[in-house]
Image (tube, rainbow, N blue to C red; front, top):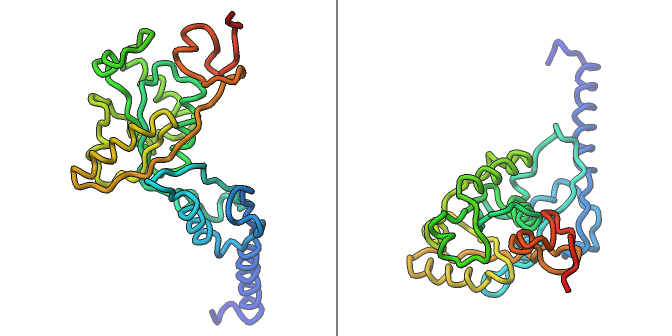
Length: 245
């Protein structure tokens, strides 16, 4: 301290003051569907608590069903700090599916899941379970489906946060995982999520928050599905390929 001299101390103090002032003046831009409409710009110092409190209020619905997707854009130098973990609502979330042909609808569900949870448990139906689902089309082997899923996770740099497991029964590990907090469902599978929560209660576990994600629609206005892709109606992106009579 002494060797710096007074001028050196003033210089270091001014740099520290500038850094603190820069951090305090960073601004948060919030989506218009949140409860923070009137506060379009908030100091960074109160962002984590304010945003998390708002998310809890906005997402906790009756019967544990959460509607909507929390998100925000934070303008901040990338090397200054990382708020990505504190911004997510859950530590562990889950979703499941056959993932026969990985299409835009699947990618949409995965995107929502990784926005919500630090770690995402992805259940992929086993070949034996898939054979009992009475699909209208043939389902590719489990190894091929998981391979394509793994490749997609790598392209999004989600692999380190994903836990892919085989579903040998309808609910899989979601019925047993004590630390699991939320389940990603569609409107068509909400009832299944409620049955899972009843099973968890019987097992002495906390029910899961059910986060409902709307099905992604194709360009013809109908939901994207593997069946429609295999029938040649749409492609993997949901673009209509032919007009049915």
